[in-house]
Image (cartoon, rainbow, N blue to C red):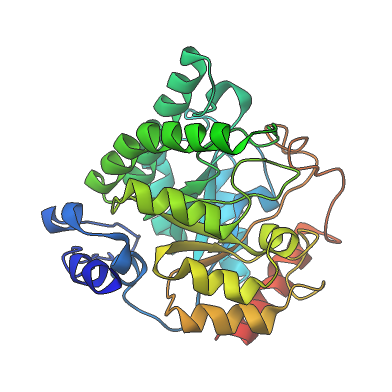
Length: 330
């Protein structure tokens, strides 16, 4: 099976990085490819590590007016990319963002904030349709601004937890695969990969483990869907972060390097040497982004329990986090 995946993955089209911005073009062969070569095809240059920081470190919601200053701060702290969150689809203009990123000399990644009114797994058809429309729009916006990935808990609202019997869970997985498959195919057509993110048990009851996420990615079986792994969530849920990363393997298309308290990487007890070795073991060469929150992110602060600031200042988190990850990863 792995050999077959590798052979299919070879058909994934080349990625072209323009010098002044990141823009991903996937040719027609990519649309028939598999998960096996996603990360390698998206990010062909392995070293040095491709480091990014979320704009949530400073501002929420992100607007056109705020974007240039935030990008300047991210660039001055030494990062290669900025991660732009879609809290709504009209918070900032993707075309303007693309120009601002180019001017700042930064690449991009994107994430989607999944709220109760855009829950893809909702039993309410109107809500699940809003979830579908949001994800399709976020993919289009990511393509326009030049982000190779659009990631997040793209299956259900952050903070939604419910008890399930095994039969109910199997039904919900079937529903998710059916609803997510056309969105993943659309992403592949736009040259974007969706990164499905397992969350900890306090933020969702549905996908907490890499093993659970792998099942969905493998059943959708589209070059437009992979995994986002987040060390904050893995620190809570996985017996071994390193083993979990290796289990995710070729499916990984994006990484959030987050401390156990969402503070500055290196200041807590995440086993960072283990994380770095596991990423090397799976030959991951894509973006590694610090995601952090604060109580002022009204869209999801309550859902992610961001009751306090997690670092002395946004600037200290940015500079010290970059220094730590650069020393760790190269």
